[in-house]
Length: 211
Image 1: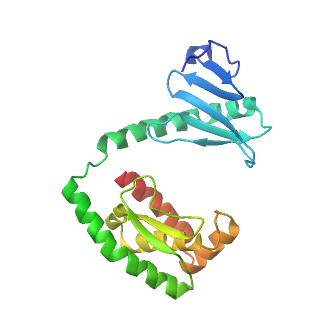
Image 2: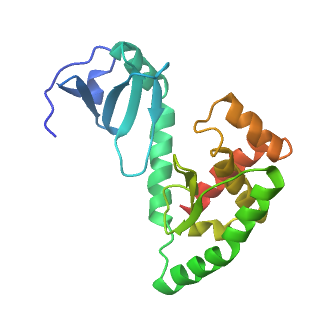
């Protein structure tokens, strides 16, 4: 991507920001944190920063939000962003590479363990779902489709049983609530005996450790 050397008054000139706006989509480039993309989202109510390994720093803002306000948030969070990007690079360097034999073993374990466990938890808490798929995915532990088909990662087999149950219950709750609104979290807290927040925080730590 080509950038024009447009000065940004909110940033120090030494940071060498460059800016590009095409069809209403804006990108900046910073010498330390790289590309920053800005996306306006119709349903967004606040400015958010998202970091993903191997991807530009992503900023989403409300449809009529101010780029200047988004830039100020980047400035406020600059040290945190740099630290997180360094951590992500370190984690990528340490990321475990699985052999085909290991993957087959994980897949076999997951297919043997997960379907009956999902069924048991669904019956215990009164959930219904259409089907289950076990996949070799690292981007998420599980998901629930619009038609209530459940997908689970084979890497769940590396988690303790209570964390596996949390992922399963999380997706089962999505059969009733398709977002992460207050009704979803209230239901998840109910079926996890008041431990939804604690288990959610633990999942974040396991994600960093494994992936």
